[in-house]
Length: 218
Image (cartoon, rainbow, N blue to C red):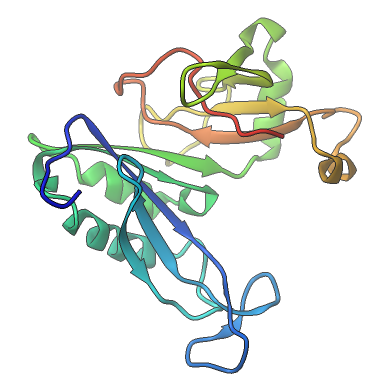
C-alpha cells in the first residue's frame, strides 16, 4: 500500500489470534482455550496482503470485547491513505457479531465514505427453524473467490425468515451448508445431517454477485 492509492472496495480483515507463551511472560495468561498464551488482535488489508495493525493483549482478553474492536479498527483505518473518503469492507468472524461493533461500523458512513461489513454469526434455535423452513430451491451452489463454483457447498438467504430485533436495519443473513469433515461428524444430528454456518454479509445496497458467498473446503 506504500506509495500508491487503492481504488474500489478496500477490504480489512479483523481477527484475534492465539500465540503460545513458552514461559511466564508479561500479559501471558490462561486463554478461553485453557492454554497459557497471548491473545492479540490483528488487521490485514486483503487487497494487498499487508498488515495494518497488531495489538498485543493479555491471554485472558475477551474475543468479542466491543471496546477493543472499535479502538483497534481506528488504528487499522489510520494506515489506509485517504480512508476518510474510501469504500471500505470490514470482515470479522463471529466475535464481531456484537451490537456495539456493528453500530460503530454503521456510524462510520459519511457523505464521502462508504463502510460495509461481513461478520460471522452464532446460529440460534430460531435460525435453525428458519433453515428448516427454507425450500431446497432456495439453495444455490457457492462460488469461490475466483468466481468458480464449489461443488458440495451451498448457500441460501435467511433474511426475512427470521427477525432479529435490535440489529441494523437491512442486515442480511446467509447460511452455508457443506459436507462435514471426519472430525465434524460427531456434532451432527438426525435433523441436521450437514454442517451449517451463518454469515451476515454486506447489506443489499453493496454490489455483489448472486450466490457469491465463499465457502472453504470442508
